[in-house]
Structures are given as C-alpha cells and as structure tokens.
Amino acid sequence: MKKKWLLTMLTFLLVAATALAGCGKSEQTGGDKTEEAEKQTTLVYGRGGDSVGLDPATVTDGESFKVTKNIFDTLLDYNDGDTTIQPALAKEWTISDDGLTYTFKLREGVKFHDGTDFNAEAVVFNFERWANGNADTFPYYGSMFGGYKNDEGHVIKEVKALDEHTVQFVLKRPQAPFLKNLAMVPFAIASPEAIKKYGDKFGENPVGTGPFVFKEWKRNERIVLEKNKEYWLEGHPKLDKLIFVSIPDNSARLNALLKGEIDIMEDLNPSDLAQVEGNKDFQVFKRPSMNVGYVGLTVTRGPLGNKLVRQALNHAVDKQAIIDAFYAGQAQPAKNPLPPSIPGYNDAIQDYPYDLEKAKQLLAEAGYPNGFEMELWAMPVPRPYMPDGQKVAEALQASFAKIGVKAKIVTYEWATYLDKVAKGEADAFLLGWTGDNGDADNFLYALLDKDSIGSNNYTYYANDELHNILIEAQTVSDENKRNELYKKAQEIIKEDAPWIPLVHSTPLLAGKANIDGFNPHPTGTDKFTKVQFK
Image (cartoon, rainbow, N blue to C red; front, side, top):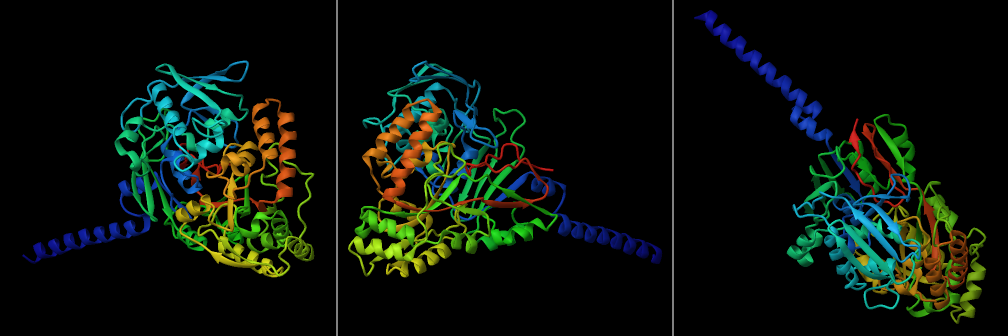
C-alpha cells in the first residue's frame, strides 16, 4: 500500500513539474506552437493616428491610404522603391499617337473579396462614380483629373468597356502624368456590388481585390486585415494578418515597440534614432524623402489676403532653428512647394531670408504696423514631415510675436481638422504633403491650382497665370518643356506666398530585426504583400 502511495505521489509530481515547465515556456515564448506560428505571421504596425475612412476615393489623409493600399489594387502600381509605373490589375496597355486614347488589358480570373468578378465594367463603374461626384465626395479625383464630369477642365471624356477584360479611356486633352495618376491610391478599384450594398457606409466596409481583406475596425484603436488567400499574385501575401494600431505619442509608440507590443513603428523621433540603431534586436528604416511640411496661409481670411502680409510671415520664420530643434538633422529647409527629388524643381529660387526687420517693414506697407491677431492651427497627430505639430506651432507663435502678430494656437481631432481646413476655416495652418506619384503636377496642380480649391488646395489661392502654366505642363509631353514650365510656376508661387514652405524631411521608422521585405515607399503608402518574418 505504501509503495503504491509513493508511486502515485511521484507520478503526480512529475505531471505537475511538466505542467510548470510548460507554463514557463508559455511566458518566455508567447504560448504553444500554434500561438507562436500566428505571432510570426501577424504584423502589428504602430502609427500616430487613425484612418479617416477606408474608401480611398473619399479621403485625402495618409493614415487612410496606409490601410487601403493593402485592401485595394489600382490598375497600375509603382515599383517597390520609386514611382516608375508597373502593371497591377491592368497587365498591359497602349497609348494612341495623339495621347488621347489609353487601352488597358486587364488580368483575368481576379475576384473582389466579396467573390464578385473584377472586369472592365467594374473599372467603368468606379470612374463613373467618381466623375459624377464633387470636391466634397471625391476630392482627389477633381484635383488629379481637372474636375468632374460637367466641368470645363475635366480631362476624361469617356471610360468604356470594349470587352470583359479590355477598358479604354478617351481624354479631352493629353495629360502627361495620366498613367502615374492612375496608380495613385485614391483610384483603387472597389467592388461595385459592395458599393451598392453599403452605400455611404462603404468606407467602413471596404471591399477590393488587394492582398488583404478587411475584418475589423475599432475607432482610434486598431484596424485588422487578414490574408487574401485568393490573391492574384501567386504565393503572396506572406503574412496571415496585418494589424494597424493607433498610438498618438511618438515616445509611447517607441516604448510599445521595445516591449514587443508592435512590430513596426512610424514617425520615430529623430532624437531617438541612436537608441534604436544601438539595439541589435531592432532596425531603422528611412523612407526616401518626397514630401514637404508647410504653413498654409488662407488667402481669403482677413490680413492674409494681402500678399505683403504673407511675405512678411515668410520672413519671420527661422526654418533652420525649427529643424535643429525638432528634426535632429533629418530634414532640410524648404523654399519651394515640392522637394528637390521631383523633376522640375527650381533650385535657382532664393528663399525668403529670416529677417524680422524686413517682415515688420512689409507689415507696415500692408497697413499693419502694429501687427494683427490670427489663429494658427496645429496638427493633432505626428506626420512624416512634422513629428510634433504642437511644438512647431509654438515655435512659429514665438516667431510671429516678434513682428507683432499674435497667433492663437488651435487644434482639433484629425478628421475634423482636415475637414475644417478644407473648407477654408483656418487662418494659418500646419500641414504637409507626401507625393503620390513623383510628378511635379502632383504638388503644384494638386495643392495650389484654382481647380483644386475645395479638395487639396486648402489656402484657396488662385492665380490665372499659374493655372495656364500648369495646364500647359500637363498637356505637353516634352519633359524638358514641362520642367521649364514648372520652374516658372514656382517663381509665381514664391512671389504670391500662399505658403511658408518649412521642411523636406527624411521620415524614420523602426522595426524588429527579423522583419524582411519591408522597404518604405517614397509615397508614404506601403504595400505589405512581400513582407515576412525571417
């Protein structure tokens, strides 16, 4: 009996020890093999703000595009490291000699996430939907294609399905960046049936053909995407799940990375660069610079309607001091609305020097010798071109005070901020732009032409001479001629000063050392199709 009791006790202790060892392993490795396997095929991406919406045609913010880039496909796409055009949903195309007709052969056998067929009729449906909209519903469409269906400047005459897998675009006039425009995230092809089903709620129930399928959105917390097992690019995507989490504070986001709560973080504070570079468990990613951070000066509001006032504010800003204080060398002063990496950049332009006396003189000439009061809006979220909008706004506030301009700092929740700025409700505001397609048109026409007022031209600046130059630059195919036109455009913009261009930054990201295949794209929107854990 005693031997039997001892044997029973030994057996119990062995089982208990095994269970405890299992518990220890779970704490160290994150659980059993199934959980570990899931962990290695799930990537958590930490970002500074939530998306505004997930219908890419209806939004203008980068946080939305980051997600929709992975749910939807466009007819064309960009190469992994630049904005060279490559096939996507369209596998080949031809262009007529007069530059007015583009014919695309589409991939066969592709399905939307809801199981419906992708075909030429779906392409026509999407473009008709956008063309029949307006700046409030589809802001990017108007700024890239010259307006909407009944507008004089609208460049697209017709989109028609020639057969199930052939679609043709007929233009009213040549548009040099047309192919690059088609590759932009806002012009991703969505499921017509899903749009009909969800109506105004489609932005919360997105359905595309992309590498990942939308599964869940908890506002200001996380968006969950899962692998599209039927994706047309064989063997991809590599990840089973992609999760975007919102962590507004840059330092808190870095702490989440160091703790293993996220796998990649964006908007690494430049001052934290050395800390990450010195840790073998992590790696730093530098996004190629194709951006501009700026102060917009809404020309329809009070004193800012006077060109001399806008020039005075330009003279009152010490850009290098702002870069030294907040960018740790990962930026350069901006003097034009587009970065030096874009063809057509005018390097001959001389920036407004930091000169407080000149600023005061211009204010006096404009009739404001004692300055004036205005609002200065500060972004509530970090952006690649501006790590901390509040601190930059405070520095600008102090600078403006030296010339008698009292700037009250104002901010709103991100979606509200963008909506109100687009409606022209701000006096001066902080914002920026990451190029969508690598073309000067995407900066100058999209942001500062009169056609783009109400969409991406938030300053409501309009200049007929500038407009004519930008339309001509769209129409000519000779790149040298286009570049000369864009250089002239920058001279006009510099003189009229609707902006204070601040910086061109090198955005920093950080991630775990075992992440492979992640190459931050210059456009700021990354497709995770080829990303995996080593």
